[in-house]
Amino acid sequence: MTDMSAALPAEDQWELLASHGFQKLFIGTWVEGDDPEEIAGLIGADPARRLECDLNTAMRWYQPVGGPEIVWIGAHSPGWTHITGISGVPTVVREAGSNGRRALQLLQDEDVMGLQDLELFVDGRLADDLGRFHEGPLEPGSFFEPYVQGLDLDPDADDEWMAHVFLCVLGRITGRFIDRDWFSLPGILCRLQERTAER
Image 1 (cartoon, rainbow, N blue to C red):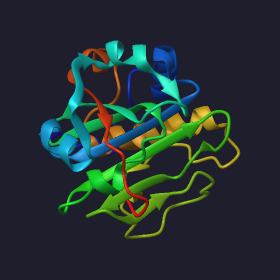
Image 2 (image 1 turned 45 degrees about the horizontal axis):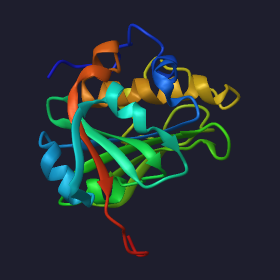
Image 3 (image 1 turned 60 degrees about the vertical axis):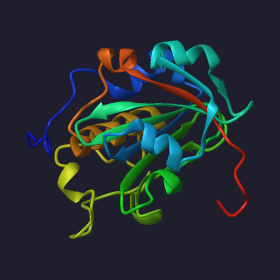
Image 4 (image 1 turned 180 degrees about the horizontal axis):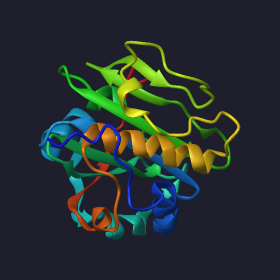
């Protein structure tokens, strides 16, 4: 894989998401693995309630916060699959990152929570995070430290700018930034089965 630890995207990452309808709420999970079907099973996707489509089509069912938990799952880059929340607030990062996998989650909620810390889960447990209000260099040994070179981690910046920065970090880690073609990739729109409280 090409070293992308200092790469920059062609377009503002948050503006791209917002222009495709995610300005109110975006819940994205990047999961190690190339098999969207296997990851759908890990997160409890209902096999009877699914539709093969791209993310642009999946946005017809976009209903931030309210509604049933619906996600879109598709290939992101070699070695990585992406899960996007379409309806409800489906935070599936623990389940997706089980079986020894790494999973990264970005949550931006315009109305209630704002931009949350960028979180890394390994084998279903929180292993590291990049704080929304972090200032200065990262601690040596931080998972995220190699990927923030040249990026402006400004605790006083607005959420939209910091979402762009976090998405740049994610692109460097996974080997692909969000681009216009990303929204047309094939994937699976799934309704999640009801999950027990401990999950």
